[in-house]
Length: 112
Ligand SMILES: C[C@H](O)[C@H](O)[C@H]1CNC2=NC(N)=NC(=O)C2=N1
Image (cartoon, rainbow, N blue to C red; front, side):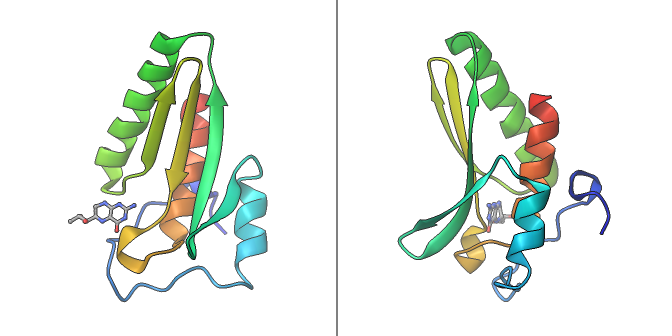
């Protein structure tokens, strides 16, 4: 499998396949700092990033936003003093797609 972070996102389609139970372990292992959460039956990938202050948190949030725009795939971003929580899922399929794991890996690269 090509390094997740080097992959590109497929166009989001309503009939795109969700990540299967069988595929989940290998994909999760590739982004070990992310949690798969069940949000009212919608599976999502979530990670919290820590910073020294609000300005650093805001800067990172904007970088994630730019990344999202660049790839046409968008997360939920919660920006707090010293913390940013990023949550990836695919709205169109109400669940997790390979794109979400790709974007999580790219987000990790941003954070360094
Ligand atoms: C029209 C636009 O390309 C689509 O609505 C894209 C935008 N970004 C997206 N981001 C995410 N996470 N899921 C989507 O289904 C999605 N769809």
